[in-house]
Every structure is written in C-alpha cells, then in structure tokens.
Length: 264
Image (tube, rainbow, N blue to C red; front, side, top):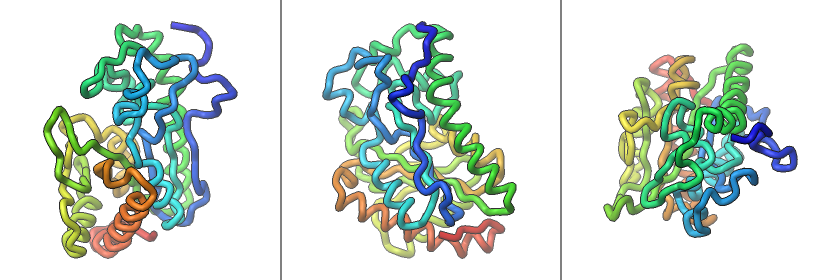
C-alpha cells in the first residue's frame, strides 16, 4: 500500500453532481458511470480492450442518466472512476468491491490486495461517493421533500457465451413498490422484453446502493439495467432515456395510492 491519497488533486473528486438543485423528487445514481482509472493504479495490468469493455464501466449508462437528469430536472450523482478500482455498488467488506476477476478477464491490479490497500480504495472512492448521496437525500428529507431513488446501469448482451435477449431489467430488493409500478407501466405501454430482477437480482449482491440509501430511509427505490448494445450511441440513449422517463411519470399514480409520491 502507498500512504499517499489514491486520487491526485488534479484528477478531481470521486463523484460528479448534475443538477444539484433539481426540482424532481427523483434522485439518480450511476455507480459505474466511468472507465477512468486513477493515475496511481495505471492500467492494473489490463490491455486497452479490457479497459474499454463492460468490466470497466456500464457502457451507455451515464449518458442515459444524464438525459434523464435533464428531462426530469433530477439530480444525478455519478462515480467518476472505474469500478475496477472500486465497485461502488458493493460495500467495503465485499470481495466484489475489488474484483480479482471480472467476466472473462483476470484483474492483476486487484490480486492479493491487503487491508490497507482496500481501505485506501474505499476512502478515496466509496465513502465520498456514498456520503454525497447521503447528504443530498437527508437534506431533502429534512426539508420535507419526498425522494425517489433510481440507479442506472447497463448489462452485456452476451454473458459467458450465453445471449441475453432482455431489453430492460427493473430490479428491487425488499421494497418492490416502485418496481411494481414501473413494470405495470411498461406492460401498459406494451414495451417488449422488460423483466423483474433481470439479468441479476438481490441474491447476486447487486442492490447495495438501494439498501444503503433507499431501504434504510423507507423511500421508493429501483435499480435499472439496460442492455448496453441498445444504448451504445446517442440515438439509442435518447430512446431509452425517454422510455424510462415515461415509466417514471406513469408510476406516479400507483405510488400515490400506496403512500409514496413521484413528481417528475
């Protein structure tokens, strides 16, 4: 482990905030927004192909989240560094926060990390990011505002040579209220290939952000997974941002009936 900070001042903060004063109740989070590696970690022993691939970031997710942020006037908090350095949808005690292998790639820079190295990563990347989300949500709740947490991800169309035909996954943990409303809205809109807890579910350990920020505060929350070949360009990103915005707006009535609120 090196004693100095993982991120140099010239690299900027661990997170970015878009529309910090957004009027929407929706708070957007993109944990895997960036493929940028902290300079101190170099390439982590990976070639350029791996560093551009899905193992480094959720391809297309950030632009969809930004478009949603703009269309809904919703605040977006994004992680500015690759999930290979630290996967911010995992707690510090989870091995997956520092993956030694991701899909078909070994990650040499994560092999044999000691507790000090892990703490350095978590202090630089995990805690600032999640503390920013804590601060935003708690400030709004203290003001008497309702908050709806939506995290934005993408997934690969092929996983270990197995095709994934779904278009959109709507994921939840113990609180399924918002997911149910969005799935009902998707069915009403006749959107194809929209599924619950697809291609992952809470049993896969993917709902950390929902649990930390949504379940603990009992606010509506949902995790979205979009197949990344559908959002690999601007046109696809716009299509899916518009569709998701419509699903969130259509979910408002159902949430009102269940005691939640959603004003986009």
